[in-house]
Length: 282
Image (cartoon, rainbow, N blue to C red; front, side, top):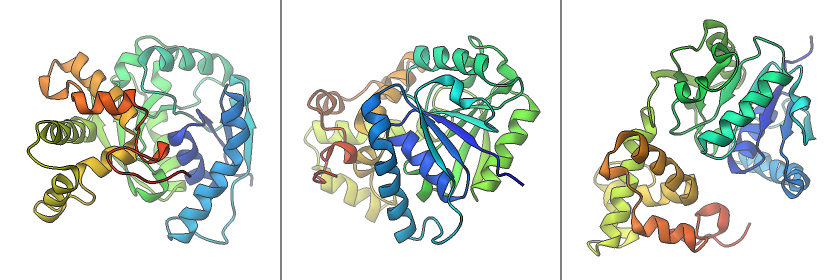
């Protein structure tokens, strides 16, 4: 029996991470991106991520690996059992892409938006077949995280939810279903905390290392908020905070000037080699 396949849209950090998890669990993947440089580098980046995941024990060694196919058009998603959109945290961009995907795949194909902050209902109001749309907040890197946030919009149908449960089972992951709303649960809590941590540094109360040491040593945070910001991607974090601020009006979500400066300087975290910490080039 042929293994059901997935299509992943976006060959950025999250798209590659999601595709790595899928391939490492034996799920064939079509990775779609319009950027030729990203398409050309995608197989190498995925191999590197897969090797790292297997070396750390996050993915099994020696098991069947899913096939990777690279494509540049939406039509390549036809026939996929699951379609996962993992483009930038931009409501307009996501809505336009989901319109194109809905026209290219069979009715009833579950469309998963990987989002950390944009409400599913906001997208559902603008796309065809909203019953097929469901949110999954894949954390970075997906192959290291065992639990994902699943967001059910008001119009999300039970078949789409069942399809997500099947996908998570195939990936050996746990999904926790939460209600829709800006930032859902994880980003609503975490991103505001990271923003406050950046403001503490900006105000000169403590250095970066001290903030993280206090949060790990005193409160048991696994990595510290500022190392977490580097892992998320400071540019992605600012995009998410902007979504939260615009949709909730919470002043604690207005992006810190320090975060904004780092984005302007190109210091986006691990993926750029420098954020709150330095990592060298990959």
